Image (cartoon, rainbow, N blue to C red; front, side, top):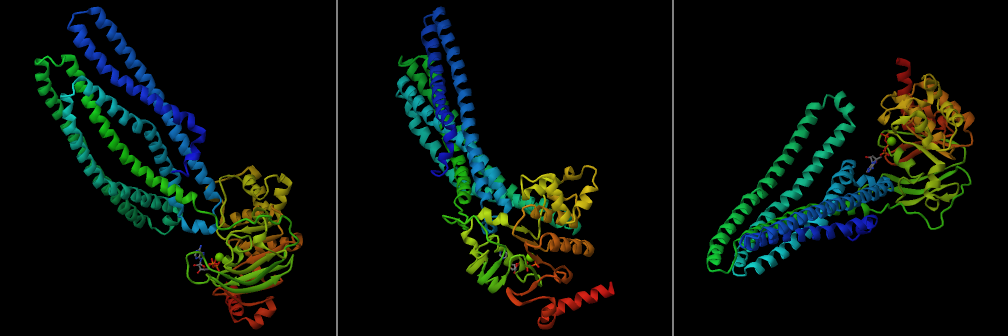
Length: 574
Ligand SMILES: Nc1ncnc2c1ncn2[C@@H]1O[C@H](COP(=O)(O)OP(=O)(O)OP(=O)(O)O)[C@@H](O)[C@H]1O
Ligand SMILES: [Mg+2]
């Protein structure tokens, strides 16, 4: 909590005044029964109409003031609570943005979504309650007790019995309900996880006819959430009748013993009425305290889940005096090994190679042979476990991270577009790019042809995830987006897999003629995509099997020649 409190800074005025107004409201609530007892015992007893009217007016005035204070307290409390929550949400979101790929491997997206929504809301609500209920209940309890004892200390002894009994019942119920509520929160998480995963991949689910399976999975989790919720609720539901029972029992006791007190002349009728009101207020305050603790419990679970995100340090650290110039696009891997955080096996073993600036490097190898893992080390999406990766002769860890990534453009294997226009999407590469530059990039990526065919051209709408484009169109837009960065190095991870061979050849040609000074790395499944590369790396189970140009590899690499032959055969039979 200490960690989060500074985020309240902007809202401290609200956080300060909400409890103050609350206390004023409580004072009003306490005064009203007192004024009422005066009306009965003094006004009515002496048949003094003037006094009754005067006290009646005071009572109405106090009620109005108490109401105004109550509303202000609620308003301020809500401002403070939800303002606080929104600051936390912002901070958490920013932290997630700074996450590295390794951090993201640890948290699932659905759990991050739950943290940003449910948990932040809970914190906001509990903060609001802390400013109001947590203040109201104890003050109410103390003031009402004082008043009750002042009216009649003999009668007030009922509280010596009622309060402990209520406290024991409440404690017992909460003790039982606590684990259930914590469990309920976990179940909510599990439901959210299915929702997120299913909806994100709803098209895949449909194409595989997995609706029934997904529905069953959802039903199982949904039911288990409902059952836990029911269990939790039915545990605490006993509180309400228990509370009523105690309140009415004490009222009967007060009326019974109060009757004797009145007959003995120790107490007025009005005092008895107000005593009963204080009695209810006291017990109500106790209930409120217990309810508040319940919520506090939920809140603390949420706080922990938020802190967990905020405490996750991106383990890719920036150097103190980072390099912000780049000599050229040469790349060197020196004895590089890599292990994914949390996995035991090394994914890359002993990688050594060097490519000169402007060279084109092809990478091929069976699926899972660590091609993607290898190139991810160049823009520092992950850091090497051993050895070093140099770009332009300097260790990538010495560069300013943003600078490095601006110079190493990486078209991810499963790249995605964002909702907006084509122009907005391509501009991710360079915010200040002019339309001419955008069109030039689209041209090189062989995307201008289909973009210019739209009546609205660059303003054509991209739906979320780019779902309104074909796979190959999406890939070409992603390439254009990367080209707009005018990088020193460009990495295409299987980025033309969905593009037809002829267009693929055109893209390669454009790269060769117009981007001859840019170091290009092409990961591909098709030999035709990398055949003309200056050099080709053949990956096998995390190691370089061989390296050389097309002709050399046909000679010396059994894997390469096998891939070549299979693809040749495929060509001929097709
Ligand atoms: N984030 C990750 N955390 C843990 N292991 C991973 C992660 N990403 C990949 N791996 C593992 O590393 C190995 C290499 O994966 P990689 O994605 O580099 O293969 P690839 O050669 O690019 O395959 P493909 O041709 O299918 O794209 C695989 O065994 C994979 O399971
Ligand atoms: Mg891959």
